[in-house]
Image (spheres, rainbow, N blue to C red):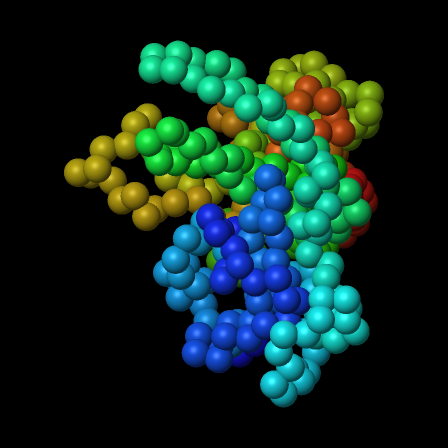
Length: 325
């Protein structure tokens, strides 16, 4: 299988300068090389290689797939092509590595004697013109060389995208959604079970998932506060989901099963976190996850859905829900 890779190396592969050279023995084709004070490496095309098999090559620092270039059918025995003609065949050089060369500030040479120390600052600007939705990262390492031939590599890595902005939509597809009507009796008997079931599938990790119950006239922009306090801003209490956590205050390996874990969908049996049970009436449920690195006190830091619902002795039939992204 033909794949494109970018490698970072202590020395360039064969010190190649041709845009299209071929190593028939290893089935690795050097498409382009990079050699600067910021990055030394190459763009490769490899047949029948994996990340593990490439990492055993000498002087390799790192490999990662090249998702910015497009393969076309190879031309037989096309070797040692003049660099000026390289753009006419093989690959579009959309790796983004070239841009990194001019986006760094490197300190002047520093010479230290035994026991001395100095602070050196390297400033790397974020590469521009990248596809931020692909969550691109950049990095390599800074080599510190000693007079006796020792070399120490100090790795660095950065993100070429706005982390918080790219995580504003934490859910996959149409999640979250409520598989129920909006009128519940909270019957648990077989055949007549009637309680809300919430489904969600998130793309990112989250610090907190909340399922809160408010009075029916709850408005997000007006009433949200963190943490919510029962009796304030229309907050009644947090819903509970079926789990074994409420049966014990601590985990004992000899008596408890670590595999007895919470899983989705979340199911609310009508009991609130303070132990009370919702009485018949009209309510608003707010199901939300906290965005990564966000401030929970800000309403916009949460994404999910709100739904008005009614608690009755028997099931009804109405639904008003609002999803916010």
